[in-house]
Structures are given as C-alpha cells and as structure tokens.
Image 1 (cartoon, rainbow, N blue to C red):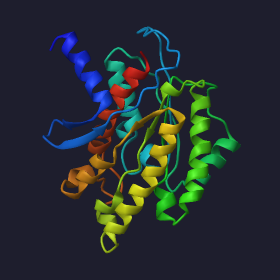
Image 2 (cartoon, rainbow, N blue to C red):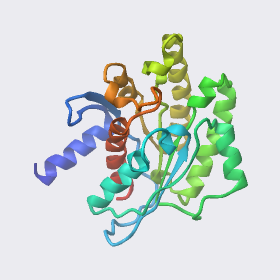
Image 3 (cartoon, rainbow, N blue to C red):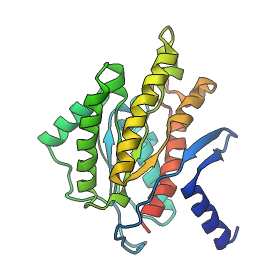
Length: 248
C-alpha cells in the first residue's frame, strides 16, 4: 500500500468510527481520537526516547496478567519496534481505585518525571461498581484530566482518555443485572467522553472491544473478571496509531 493511500486512510479514520479486524478475525469498533489542531507539536525524532505515563485502576495495572501484557507496555513495545522509541511506561494505578483514590495518590506523590510525551487516563469502573454518584465522577474526572494535561506539558494532543470497559460480559457478573451494569457503564462513559471533548484531548472507545468477551473466553483473564493479554492487545492496537499521530 503506497504512502498516499495510507495517509488517506488515516485521515478518514480520524473523522469517523472505523471497524477493524484483528488477527483472529474478530471485528471491533474504533472511535478515532479527536486530535486538537491548535497545539504546537515537535518533529518526530527516531533517536529520542519517549516517555508514557498511564493513570488508572486494575485495567491499567493489568490485574491477573503478566506485566508484559499490560496495554501500556504492549503499546510502548509496539511503538519502539516501529521506530518510535519508548522507555518502560510509568504506571500509576491500582486495583479497586476510584477517581477519588487516584486523586489522593497523585496528591500524596507526584509522578517520577515532571513531563511525559504521552499520558493516558482510564478510570471509573470502580466508581460504578461502588455506586459512587455520577456527579462525583464528573467533578473528580475533570480534575484528573487537568492533571493529566499538566503531566503532558500542557500539550492536550499528547493526552489520551480511554473509555471504561464493560465487565457485565464476564463470568464475574453472572447472577447480576448485566443490562443495568452495561447501562451504567455507558452513562459513565458519556461523562468521560464529554469532558475529554470539552478539554480538547484524544478519546479512544475501547468499550466495544471489551464486550467481545461475551462470546470469546480468550479475552478474559483466569480470574473471570479482568481482561486477558489478548484483549489488552486489542486496546494497544487502538492506542498505537493515536500515539503516532500525537507525536507528529
């Protein structure tokens, strides 16, 4: 495929939601990130080692999978193999964290570096699970996102919000009101997407790919709740092209 065709496809997918097949034939939806046009960028330098900060909860720390399977780690490895050299991601996340817990952690101890080339934020499933209010989530997510923007050197183009996965499709949710869980996850995702768009950062909708686990057990870890390395690979496959565009 020549360079002109590839560029055309990138532009097309940046404007609409695209369907993508993975290596096993599964199809999932990619809601392309919105790339702000008014942010100063730096040239792509393949000799530069870049940094990635991933903020979140169990989905970011990769509960029940090896460290190498975490989506941020997979993305950094893939980018490095494609001449976008990344150091090991710094991950500030813990199983069970709500937006409030993540805020407290960041207040108690700042990230290791003053600035990062890419910052990701994926948080909110525990707000839903613990029956925290949507208003609390709205207020705290906004604060977290503003912190993420600061960690990216106030370069909004370098910040990527990921939507909350839907755990209603996992064995863990057996016996629960799965439809209610899915509706609540969708409602929290409306909040984080709205705030992300208002703040002018990138947004990747990974929720559709998480729902593929309803019919594919290989996408769920052995604990019956968290994503497997294969599902994290789907998220990484969505994250990598967004990061490439952000680094241009």
